[in-house]
Amino acid sequence: MIKLKHFFTQTLGLSDTLFELFMYVVMGVFTTIINIVIFYIMENLLHVNYIISNVIAWVFSVLFAYLSNKKYVFAHEDNTSFINMKEMMSFFSFRFLSLGIDTVVLFVLVQWLNQQPLIAKIISNIVVLIANYLFSKFIIFKKPSN
Image (tube, rainbow, N blue to C red):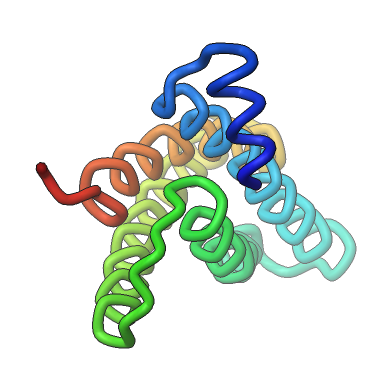
């Protein structure tokens, strides 16, 4: 990870913020893939209701997102139990809020605008990706002011 950051910031001359944004997008793509694949399997192969499929996909993708954001995106190294628990609770709380956003967007697109559930899921994931970055950057993994 350090070599990758060094390559982007020193060799290519990108700022730490641009590297962080790049890593967020990369981890977000992996999180989105996990989310959509689980949603697809649940909804299409196992014939589970699309809202229930969405919640199950959310649980797995949020766990992956927390671990990858903490380690690779925001490189948050505070390892005290209290801070880790507070941070994890904050992360899951905001992701629970984004689950609500995801579900509402999905419901509106499928029920009111007659979109296919998978297309609606992709659109809702884009909305959620933006919201989650803002929550993570400015609230959950906020770096202390100097």
